[in-house]
Length: 96
Image 1 (tube, rainbow, N blue to C red):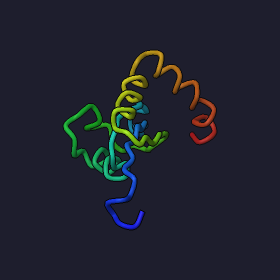
Image 2 (image 1 turned 45 degrees about the vertical axis):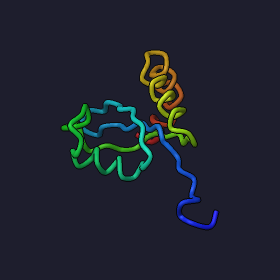
Image 3 (image 1 turned 180 degrees about the vertical axis):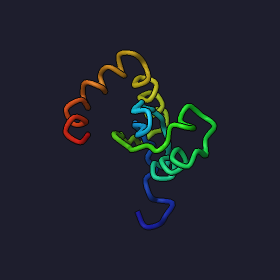
Image 4 (image 1 turned 45 degrees about the horizontal axis):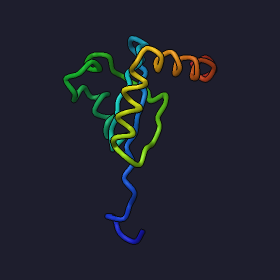
């Protein structure tokens, strides 16, 4: 990997927690830092607008966009939401 074009492109599935409402939001992006900033500045006309500020509480990285979108869809399902809440329960209780 010698040039910028050789840099691996990752796609991220992420979970944000609203500090205002304590609700969780699951999304997918290729630029995690930029997307967090966009959610916190209200740049999107989406569910997250009006619920900022957000903190990033979880993310996963994927080499292929289709895999990231499939995981996002799974995590937004009932069983996926329950799985993540249970998985993150102890961590979140320790960090507030």
